[in-house]
Picture 1 (cartoon, rainbow over the protein chains, first blue to last red):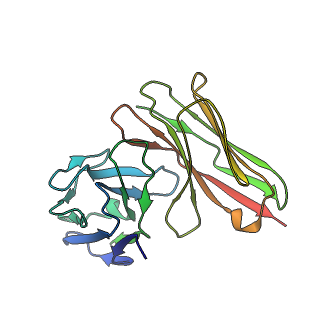
Picture 2: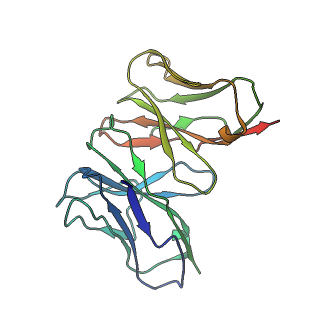
Length: 114
Length: 109
């Protein structure tokens, strides 16, 4: 079934540890995104990639890094986790980077930083 | 910054009609999306409006007024499975999405 796969589903992480959240899509979409979702707040964009080989910063990029070595994969790395990074993380993709293209979301990674 | 405003929570009765409103700031507007998100799941696309008027898609319809910075999602013949959060999102001048916090819709029998 075509779609976006995120791993892990959930994770408890000690503060200060490094963590990579994985995201893979098989729809050959050009654009990919990482969002975090916190209670009472809208989805907030962390980083995005309009096409393989390029990345950009979103609204809340500090403490996170991404890479886009190929079309399918868009991992998100937390270099040194802090408790404020406790959140649900969603990876998404769209056929085109313009905002008219609907986003397809992965099932999310629930991350708890202790 | 730009704000998207939508009610935090709404309650409706099975079989009824409910309208979920969303207001946004009109500068740099590039379309208005509605997504549905069931608890513990990913958001899924419902509708996209870029021109004024009503777009109907089965039991769900979405309306846009660009001059008023206003949209609504209309859900008819409510079913228990419609219990979910409904997210309003505006495309901005940089082709990124600005998201509302979502409206939690509770359907009662």
